[in-house]
Length: 55
Image (cartoon, rainbow, N blue to C red):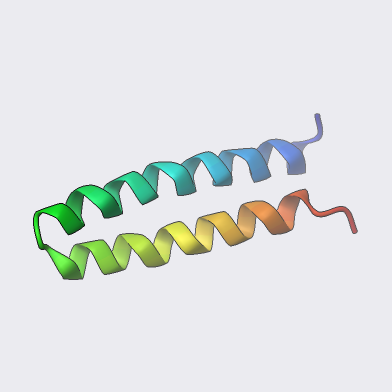
């Protein structure tokens, strides 16, 4: 595995953990932290997918 692939997989794992944080904050009806974490999760997931796409 190359460094770019490891970085991509790491970003996908980070995005997964952040999605779990969104779910826990949304259950408590804390919408501002849930929205911020959702944006970070989306950014991490998109960056991870873009790292894994061969150029």
